[in-house]
Amino acid sequence: MHVFYIPELSPAHAEITLSEEESKHACKVLRLKNGDQIALLDGRGGDYTGEITEDHPKHCQVKILTHTLQDAPKHEIHIAIAPTKNNDRIEWFLEKTTELGITEITLLLCKNSERRQSREDRFEKILVSAMKQSQRKFLPRLNALTPFPEFLKKYPQGALAHCADGAKNGLHTTFQAQNYPILIGPEGDFTAEEIAAAQQSGYDFITLGQNRLRTETAGLYACMLALQEIQ
Image (cartoon, rainbow, N blue to C red; front, side, top):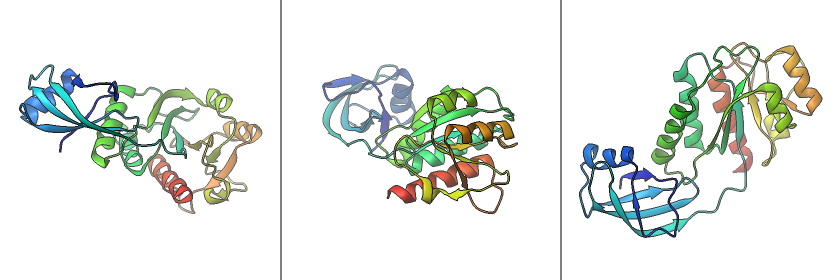
């Protein structure tokens, strides 16, 4: 059954009109017709079955047949990551961590960041596509590009992975299932000043192994390590 994302959908709806983009995809690309059934997700745990009643390519009308609601996960996996110079690499990270079960992503602006702007609209579409493909019921929260000092003020504790010398622990010894973001720096790593600021704030320093990882690989690996702690 084809899956569509309708963020405004709720159990109170008896019918819903797909967005123009989703209507075009349903009626022109997939060639769905009146009477065809589709799956609908609201990104907040709602899983619906609908039947097309008006197969219009700009405002496809759908009658809601059934719905179920999945409880929100009790854990959080929040990774704050500096966008890579090559957009394809950070997009790969967004897709794969969404498939795995990440709950929140913050785009982090650091002193060594090579990319100082981000396309949140493009990134949001990647998250939606990965959610539908992996049959997840919750869409990860995507936070806009945030300067490093502002992030520390908002999240004074968490874990930070860096390549500089010094004592570090494995994530399995420090991870907490709530209010514990994991910070992944840019290709040039965090600066000494940023590392010191994080330490003063109360961050744990973690290791992601002996090999030096690309930014997006480090983010994916950190997500996998966190998943191991909550499963």
